[in-house]
Image: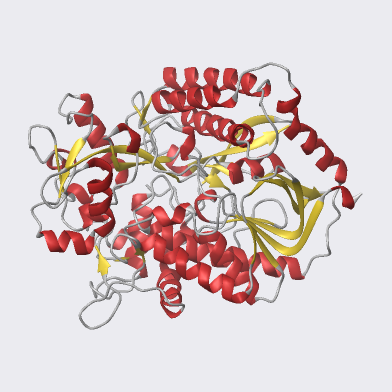
Length: 575
């Protein structure tokens, strides 16, 4: 039976080769188990490279008063206390050591005069806390982790898409997928599987995310029976490029504001004075994004529907040294010299706070042997992520997931694979070629993006969300009849069919959760429920699969121990 498919066997299989996946692989390899890492794109193309501003870690190299307690407080406040407090604590405590590890493995950071790692200010952080390499931090992080992984002998399967998690009873048995180039099917047998597939930005029309971000891992976990949680919390980064149209949504790093950039409307007013007079441009991302959106809606936006972000008051050599990527990005893509004139920016779908529900210590889901880390997992960021916390999240919980996955694999027998499930998946994958008519996937994807952008965006209301659910249902019916031309070789239309399946599943989870949460908290803003509601501050929306149907249940927010409550109370007047 096995000869019908290409089969690879590992103790630990990691899906996704971004920061979380690579860090998990390195940790699992160090435990002496056999590790495979599968990525949809090429190694080095992970979306982590788009994280520009820095890695948040309380190193206290610049602000000596900083420590893990302050970082924990900032993370909890930024997340509007919906965070998993244990994840926030572990993250704040372990991030400095994870950064030092990166440094030991060869990462080149900007330096203070006395040779320590330089740290910069960022929105929502009390102290200068972001360890950085100009505005190319994510790129340096991926380079370092890849070098380390290749040196340790990591097995990498590139340009391979996973379409189903395989199970042996209730536990994970591996994964099934196909090679994107030839369309050949492939089976991975594994005792542990770690999902590190990132977010869902390509379900929205304007996004900073690359083509890989189609919610694959979340959909895989959900369909295998794992819980999703807090799916309503989608972060819109305040500053993406808005002009020219071909580059709309491309990220303009928060480091521009961290280095002194000022936001102005078309009248030249520094409008953040209206919305957050204390923190101004360094307010949290949800506040800045809504502020820009409001300025545009009230007819104070720029020519192309955004705001001006200006750093030209700083010396030109300083801007080029601190923000080299931004300087070249605007010069080459928009013909704008940011040392002389302002950038035009606007909100762009950027990051998913919600995701697969995991245990704080081990990153294990509700399914034995299935783990998740990074943006695909939920808990650390609560209702709104602080800038820079994503990169330290990848390191801290990527490591924990890799360690726990290796330990699980060492104590587990090799699982049995049910090949009838694989045959079923093959049939499902080939169905679009066998239909004689039906529309192609591109129009359905475009309509999904229009629906999510217009109805499940920065501001939401019941009427829009109900309409979105109805439209998603129609799109699912259209997707079930989708037709693909040509063969399985080099067929991007066929690739999009599976991506659409994932995006529609996760878009529905986001919309249902947003409809249920009748309050405004963090990145979730309801026009019809504009206030924080204490009752909603005590519970999460959990998305479960029940007899093939998506169902929402509520789960209580974990009770915080008294010593951490005291930590939050001690400094309550500081912000």
